[in-house]
Amino acid sequence: MAYHSLSFNSVEFSYPSSIYPVLKNMIFEVSPGWTGITGENGAGKTTLLLLAADLLRPSAGTIRRPDDILYCPQRTDTIPKGWEDLFFSGDNTAGRLMDILGLEADWPYRWDTLSHGERKRFQLAAALMRNPAMLAVDEPTNHLDRKAASLVQDALEEYTGVGLLVSHDRALLDRLCNNCLFLREGTVTLRPGGVSRGLAEEERELVEQRGLRKKLMDEGKRLAAEADRRRRIAESSRNRLSKQGLNPRDGDTRGKINLAKLSGKDAVGANQYKRMKNRSDKAVEALEQAANPHERKKGINLGGRQARADRLLSLEPGSIPLGEERKLSFPELYIRPGDRIALTGPNGSGKSTLIRQILSCIPEGISRLCLPQELSAEESQAVLEALFREEDKFRGEILARFSRLGSDPRLLFQSALPSPGEMRKLLIARGVFYEPAIVIMDEPTNHLDLVSVGLLEEALAEYPGALLLVSHDEVFLSRLTNREWTIDRREEDSIVRIVL
Image (cartoon, helix red, strand yellow):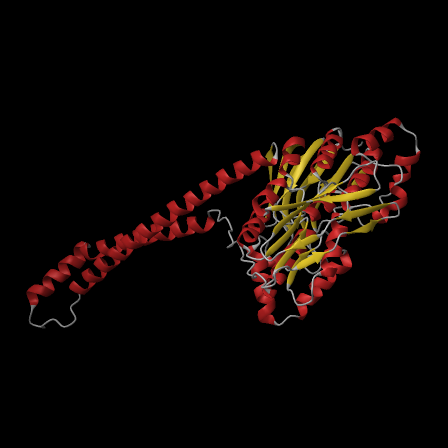
């Protein structure tokens, strides 16, 4: 009989290189409809998704799932399987998905020139075309402009099977999800509703836990102080009842001491101390058993400086080819030491191509911190290997800053390759040490959890040098930039232009 839900029963998972389990004692069951999976970068969200999709085997426990499962990965390196059915079947569903997600007929033939946002829409359309009993989707709105993200939401909303959705997109999770799985330190909590409702409930619980711990700590201190006071009373009583140093002829005092011992008065103080010490010990035990929300210090300073040159970059008016039939035309472009520039435009308009051109034209003597839109698996591996080659002290300082960006360094080396969000934080943590005069970031909030986006925003707000930011996050850009380069893409025109 086919199984129409997903259930985890006491599931644990460890990678071969793991010192301790990545996931532990996972117990939950979800039915058809979308279930969000959220947590900080490196918490194990993708690992949980792969376990659910039967692409990883648990170290312990059992998983029950539907038979027909499809996994949509976070990366868009390769053209999705089954794309031929989408483009050549002539099926009404295929045509409708292509219309909803804005796919163009020539995309299969120019996959290498598609933007990451266009590739993601292509990937999701192929998955929805197959309509599996269970669909596991990892970060579907990364790289997407606002219009494209809305199209993806519309398409995903029509799916009726068991859906698992890893995302840091609060609007997407709130709109689609019946419930959300919250990952924290290897354990999971299932909460009803979207992510905003779940986060509010989690915060209430954390406040209650902090209040309980404070109450237990205060009670423990009070009991410890009272136990100490009674210990001193008991010691004083023992000293008074001691015959040591008494005159052998002082029979009267010796008689009183003997009477006190015979009546048991000498044990009162000691017994009171023992009872109070026992209460104090139990208070300490209760405190140790109370939940202790693990809170690392967070927030970094990018450091850096303003360069003394009048301009860090000047580009004469010109154009850059975008594939075979289009080109990006631009007027004179320049960046001054204190400029904070937003580069905006729809998916596929040439933003990343322009960034690469700008990087190639910055003079060698100007220090920079560059965050690319994506790192390939090979590039990510090279970054990790470079970290291992660093001196212990320098590596420790990098990992300390990595921690302050909201991720646990202990989890960084748990899997064969860290998550894209962890890799972005690692690049930022390493780049801080070069005191950059200019920071260039292509979609910096992609892959980052909600807390980390706020930490990055705070760091960039205090950064004194020049900023060039590519992002579809309008709130993020409005808080950090004061100039804008907009790429105006007109479908009927082969020339894409930058408007200053």
